Image (cartoon, rainbow, N blue to C red; front, side):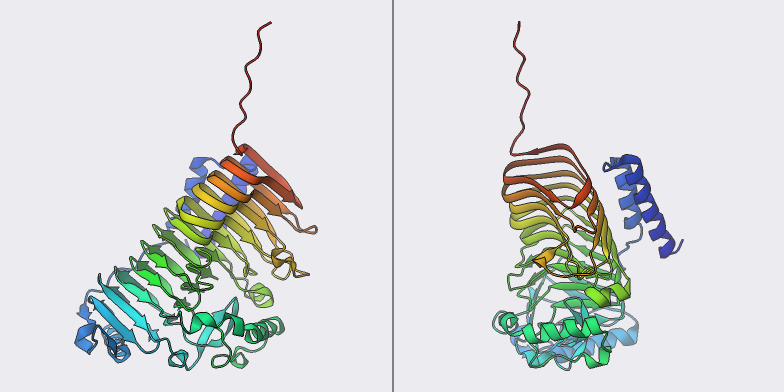
Length: 456
């Protein structure tokens, strides 16, 4: 059975479930749909041969430029058809991007730290990449893989973007280039003309895997990223497992799947300066033209901390569907728990989103859906429908527990809540421009028990 047929079967299964149950999905049906996704995800095997990066001249003294050693090691990997490159304990200074190759395992042992140069010029010449949902040429991501198969980044070591003093200061300078990139997107400018880099102040991602398949990222700790931490772009069959973040720079999203499919994110400890998981699918004209949704994503057994826990959008013009979020908790404050956001510039859809057994301690908003993000846009309202929540709890909600904001011409449709428990919320439920909203066993601000009847 090819992947297109599997996706069709999954979509048909979801449609049948909603038709049969309204906004209620049985545990058996939920597990069957989730398991169809998990069947498509298989982590790549480790290469048979391994070698220490020390053999190629690297020194973990925090001073020696180890980029030449990594280039030699990657060349050996390519020549041999696969290689596990072991990075022992030590701090390895890297003056420029690591350009990954096929059949590579980069294994960071406990105590190993990859510390990247903080000089932006070291990440030129520009490479083909994407920035906030628009394809363009920009500074290279610090770890960059393009068009690869079988890529593994593993171990107990640290990936340190070392960006606090340079890249992380650029946001206030990026506006002109940011708006130019969006204009190029809307006008369909040829990619070759979309040249940024020096003087543009568009920050690179820490790790970007672009048009890659068969990926495993496991165990490593991620910190001090220039921009988004792990960007999975037009990629598939990806497992991200057991990693952790301490990434507090501005726009330090944890994991951003974009135009990507068949992804398992599990047992991750987030602590990010922005969204923990942000599912994206391109911006505006370009995203709608690509018509490649991000789909078939399972997020489970994670600990959330940072801005928002799980987000779809706002760059999602090609659509987001078949997302399963289950058995997760918060490890600290999150501004919002589940956040589905779009605006009438985007178009596309957000559908078949399943949330099951999530526990938060304190948030600003617990479950927030908006079709009018930032109050802007026109002409391309997003179709948000078929979202199911079973088991969602929070101790304190500073603002609103449940917010649904549709668009007058395209209302949010078929949203179901079951087994929701919020101890305190300033606002319980706020719903506008929505239809077919179902609440079952939803208690916000406590439970009101029926008083015993008086005897007469």
